[in-house]
Image (tube, rainbow, N blue to C red; front, side):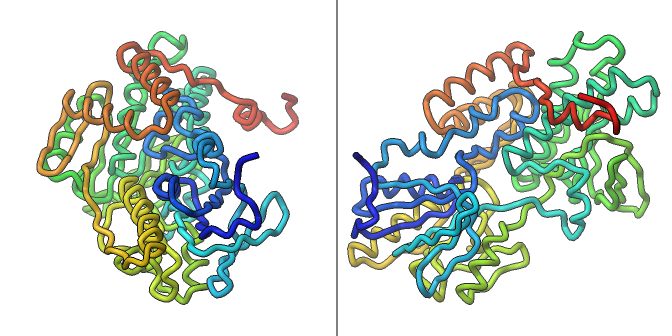
Length: 439
């Protein structure tokens, strides 16, 4: 029998969260003289940058969300626990969690908290009920149902105005996620769904991208920002810059422009990709440890990513406030590995080192064979940018099977025009039933 034992006296590292931060922290500890407990409320590691491809029918959920237990099957010193962390007792060094309705406590010697982030609605949490965020697998699957369901409803709709509303998609947020989502919606409507319907023409789909600043992909610089806007406009996307969402309900979206004028956009599907906020676990930890948080709910940490009051606790990824770092996967990857290496340095009697983020670049795919990429001083677009995007995403997908499967689907979707993942599940069908109707 392999695995960890209750009486194991090795240094115990508990990792909360199986995202990029938790994954790379555990990988860095594979051959270390420690035992590891990984806690998450889901059973998968999510490759979040490709959620939009699940939502638009290119990839299946399994291709971007491999099971945690399978990922760590060759880590005999690592145990996975599915549960919801409810509290952290930093004085007793225990994590209290709910495991399928059972309250349990896990002791630790070192703790790495990689709880991630959730969508931020900038003080308008009421928008959540009538929009789709892009943070979890559930979000992507729900959005997939909304997208393909909208075309089915439009095909059956007799009223021209309501049909136009059903075929209007509003994407809020002009960063990489919003840009990729808007681009794929146009790809879907003008290529993948052609000749699929008889009462509607998917080419007539209206895709609206709303951004509160003066440019798309602004973190990539002005040149790539202009390139992104040009390519999306050529594809038929409608772009509103310097515009804020001031109302959103099940019927549509109201935007307020820079000159104070407003515009109502009737739309059935609204995608929220406008911002993030640290997960609530950050506030729980800060309250327990006497630590501070910033306006985004991130926990302020020491230069080595540890808590000022409890150096045995590390906070990484989207949950930490460590200078002015971007909210990208690479920050979580590097900070998670750094926290693990810091633990090992302490076990060797050596001081920890400050965390220094190495910006490896930012990429955003706009359409098939077209992307923008910023890597150091290099800024490229078009096919070269797309090739860079392809290489990076194939590299970071977890597992050979997922890499091969994703590459196969990309060939089908980008070279051809197929979308395998278009099934509407019973949950969506049930939602369209009128009261009193049977399924």
